[in-house]
Image (cartoon, rainbow, N blue to C red; front, side, top):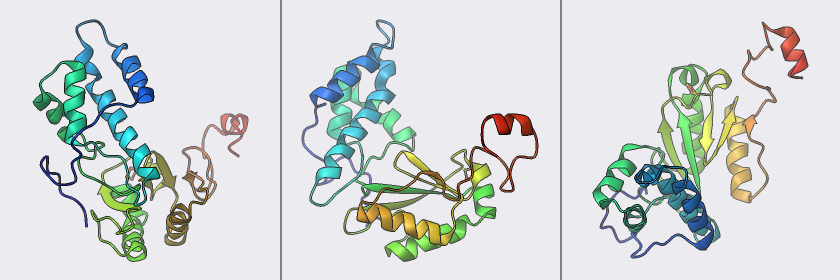
Length: 219
Ligand code: FES
């Protein structure tokens, strides 16, 4: 069952602080901005918070993925000396921030026209059937959450999904099942094109710039 976004939910931890390694990274991000403009680091710090939670979740008995608790947003507001509401406004605007717990593997299925024409519907169905959940839900073991998203910019290798930070492209139903099974079993999974296609070109190979393609060793 997917947890709803709720700032007062039971799943919200009471406290959040950046651990030393993440605190160091947050200082580096803040230092990218001119004096007096440190609040511009809010997006980078939200991303860091999500990554710290993901690191904790990967080690938990019942795993979970990266998300941003209210306590983390409040901590970021304190660090950047800005009203918490301003941090909530940014966090709720962008879909890459998860504001409620998600599975260790967040499977984002692209459902926009090029992927849809190339079989995104079948990818969505095979994910739902294989994991035994519907879109927007999470598996009981805490491993997977399924989402449908708009174009992820890898249309030429459609259909594709994003799982955490990685893209998996040129999918079909069998390849999708294998990826899910390998992730579940902790096996190494190769990212990018699942059919070995290199770079952004037609499935039959490059049709222009042939010399450059040879130089780049894609043919
Ligand atoms: S339509 Fe799926 S990546 Fe663009």
